[in-house]
Structure formats: C-alpha cells, structure tokens
Length: 142
Image 1: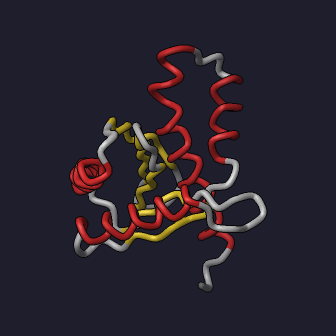
Image 2: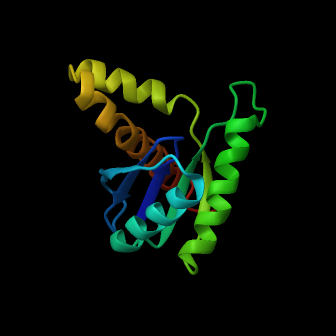
C-alpha cells in the first residue's frame, strides 16, 4: 500500500511517501505555509498528486504520554486534512523524538544552515513514515 506521512508545523510541513511494497520511505517535499487553513489545502493538494492510499500525520504526544496544545493542533489538522482528501483515510502516529532523530541525522550528514532548515521537516516526515512502516511489518495481524 502506498502510504504518505505528514510532519505538520506552524510554518513548514514535511511530506514523505513510500512505495507500494512499503519497503522504502522517501522525502516528498515541504509545504511552506503559516496559515492553518491554507496549509490544509496545500498539503491535501500535494498529497493528491502523490496518490497515497493512507496518510499518517505525526502526533506530538508529550514524553509523559499526555496530549498538549501542539498535539491537539495536529489532531485538528488531521481531521481537516481527512475531510479535504475525501476518500483517503488519515491516521495519527506518535512522533515522539522524530525531530530529535532528524536533527541527529542532519548532524551526521553535516547538513547546516539554510539547507538544514529546508529539509528537516521532510526528514522528520520520512522518519515518522519509517516508524509506521516498521510497526506495520511487526503487527501484520492488526
């Protein structure tokens, strides 16, 4: 199944997509938009071009497991995105530590400055998708 992931942010939203065999998660770009409603529309339009069968939205749950303001914002984004996508289901996925992982990856590849800012969100989306794909591989019965 072709699955897309979204790392929603206040100014930039990262996208990632996998192949139909769910073997490889790849960065799919960044949507730059600060307005919430316009961000939903732009992300939906970009996802329609990617033709996923499922969309995973990062859900930034607090480290203690509680739902904070940021997570609530992402929940609302996911609801509106699913409505905009019509027939494509959208699920939330716990994204704790993905930004930290993305920063670690970019540090390891010595990606700095403007280039780093441009790719960190799509790298985070790719990590969210990889985590989701690994979960699916290990929980086929669900």
